[in-house]
Image 1 (spheres, chains in turn brown, orange):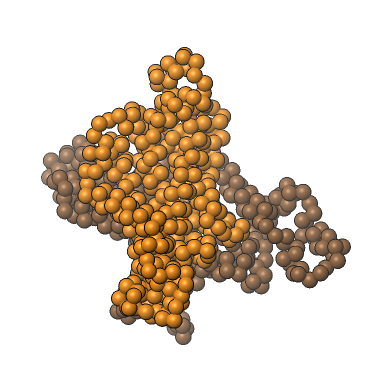
Image 2 (cartoon, one colour):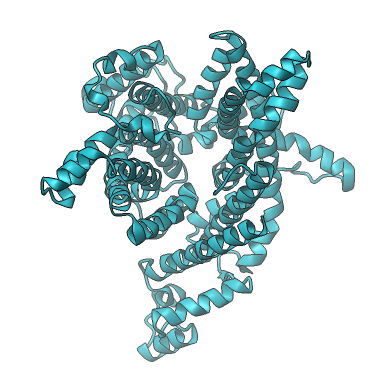
Length: 325
Length: 288
């Protein structure tokens, strides 16, 4: 097991490094001279431009610049956002909490409901041919998988915020400010409902499908038959025997999608004015705030690499039958 | 991917069409795609209004005089824009899927056929591209390098080929060991000829399935990019229409409902087609 973890760690390091290098290359090959951007259209003397270039290390060969960039990233220095007059790292850190709240809620909801639907569908499919519940769930999940999540967000706003007036649709707290502590936290929960649901639907359908397939695979196994023969209740058979053995692929799909949920939150945050990293990305694109954009790309990619790593290790722990990941 | 199931020539199996058209949902998906392609090609004759030119009557509700899906904030006909929007979605969806298929097949075939360090290197590259969060990378590359239809096609394709390459590699690696390939080798055929004429036709099934699913994914990414304001402003796009709609949700629900429905139905149709192709070409396993 230790050897496996070490091997996976060694595998993840070059991937992380490649992500940072890609980020650097994107900066280096972006059209437009950063110094001209900094100085503006002002006709500056060439000596001044050369001095600026030296100051920012842009006169160095590309590989020297790359090493410097790696050094800075290693200590958490992602540059300065001129649009926000703040270091990029601080800017992202401020928004991290809101995004984590949204993405983790969405992922949790998608997992719980997706697994429940998957189990119901598998039971319906295995009990008799063409179970009604199975057909309904399968049809709904095909449809749900095709719906663009940002459009779903708009439709939820139209129905539940504008039409019925049940839930708020913009921001993550009352505009007039909220009470401190527990009461304020409870007051902000309604703001979470619509964006979290919009973000979760695609993954909910994905988890439903995988759970259904994994359950069907184990439902025919001898130990399920044996459990039934012993007179175990349907609940015990489904959850204790079947779901536990079907858990590995389901957990793997959840883990491999962490990064996609995080990336998807950019669109959802734009629709719901949720003050997280996605909204920051949206704003920085319209302001052409490159350091912020690239730092966010780096952060999301690194999250994907780490989530995949953790998923592989957990996958292996709960299912030692997997020889290689 | 069940590799064993892809070995064999799917198109010589007699009841392919019968297998494909077993389900009603496949008929519906094919009919919808056909109608969409027709509408996109014949767009100027399908609609009565210029999709880019506004009028004095902005934010008209559906079924208002002459505009059965209403008008947007600039008085442009929503039906005309939905129909013309099909052009950009289909162009980008199909072109980037084709592009991704070409890249994925070439890389997958090289890796699977030659094996060894070529295989290791190419699969590491594929893994790297699969790690990248597609949407965020596409977003940032387009934001940095500017937008155009061609750039969107290239970026989406560049981020979509790895899955195909992996599947093709697996099929090719198995097929390369088979007797008919040995026979071709003994007969003196070169590597390129063996790959192109002997191996790839036998690995076609998963390529077709994934290609169809890639069209759906590309259409979603294009819509997302346009929603972020990074689409090609010279063309009508469903995603950009949803961007316009965002500010008018309170006053004009139709600006959001119809273009979104167009995206969802198109993506659903290509997904259903992909699933049906998978069932028909590869009855024993699933491609995903």
